[in-house]
Amino acid sequence: MSVKDVHSFSPAPPPSDIQQGDRKTLDGASFVELLRLERLRSALVPGGSLEAAASPNPVVEILIEAFAQSAVAPSAAPLGTPAPQPVTADGSPPGGEGPTRLDGIVARAAGTYGLDPALIRAVIQAESGGNVRAISPAGAQGLMQLMPETARALGVVDPFDPEQNVLAGSRFLKSLLDRYDGNLESALAAYNAGPGRVDRGGTLPRETREYVGRVKRGYREFVG
Image (cartoon, rainbow, N blue to C red):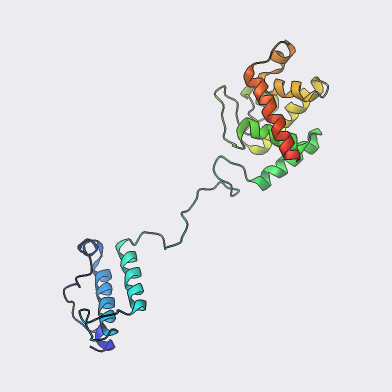
């Protein structure tokens, strides 16, 4: 059989090594192309037939296998193509805030209110883990977990907007530091439990004490 015969053969029963399940899923054009490649393989091996082939041509074998897989599953992504990942408008994962943009927002808030950027980052990490859509069981919202009434008092229109949330949260944190004469533990406790609870004195709730410790550890890590 000559190579030109590959293009002029009349369809014949499919070779035995094409699985029945594949024949059912291939459309007509794909099946004919697969048969053409099978005939090409037989033309390039000694003896001119599949039965006589002792060592099939490896290049043709690869072509046939690749075509068979793509024809059986035409909607599948090419081998090695990563699955598409959803992203937000700025290229960050859903619910998260891209590090470059967040760094810029934190830097602006720190400069505006005279705070250490590392402290703002530590509060964000403790409050929301960087999730712009975070909502607590108590109803606190966004990166710095502002309660709705606090957000309104600070002029926030959209608590899930990273810039509005961080600027307002930083402003609130600065006011608490001023209120407690720069005492970081008291300011953080008031940020978590409210100024009224801190002003009453006494032992703070365990959740608040753990929160203060978590922010302080994060603060040290961001500084370092």
